[in-house]
Length: 302
Image 1: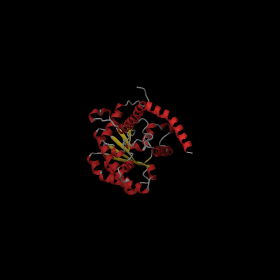
Image 2: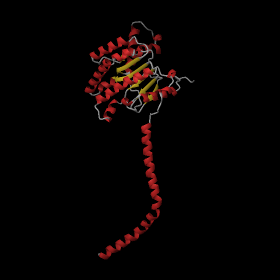
Image 3: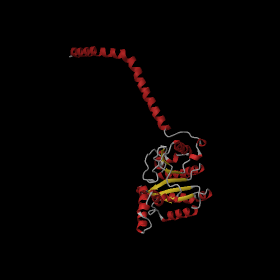
């Protein structure tokens, strides 16, 4: 038995010797290659991390922008409040609060830069499907923001309009909306539009229904209906510049989510990876610089 085991061990040793010799011979060759592959992967990972960190960032000085090329109307989709709160270990409500504060700051910057109209997709019709407590808190936040900023709007002569369906908005908020719209409607150079319970499809449907009613009353004929007439029936008829020149959406999402479906036909789009509460002056200047570098053709060859 012992001799059998010895024979097997000897045979195994004879088989393994060539393998050890081969490994010993080629190990100095393969080791640097293995280390090189490891370093390449690490460098690639670092590069991807840097790319993700730098994506959408570009330092732009305010004086580099041309005032004559500023958009007249900037539309904002304020996306990322909840994710921002989660990243910072905060409540969802605190994320929305931070987003509301940032909105006023960005609107003020836009007005300082000579932009006439700033609109925001503050609450979509689809947002009614969110958690009931979150919806109630958002309604309370809208009411608080309108009340707490009313002196600011008057001091800076900012006209405020709120557009949307509004049939489901609580009466106290509607009263506040009507009050601030009425008392600021005389201001001409700065216009802040908040879309609450807004849907682009509802906007178009509402315009169509209005035209049908006017047709039934004999106020308009079929040949009267053109783009200009439809635009006068849209909810953005409250502004001199109903079609945004630039639309900015934050948080990395690249869709318009039923916002201004008619009005965005020729709008320049800018998508930022930054969550809305982190969208600061530098990010705004970056978006405006991107807009000013573009050549707008409106379907025509120039």
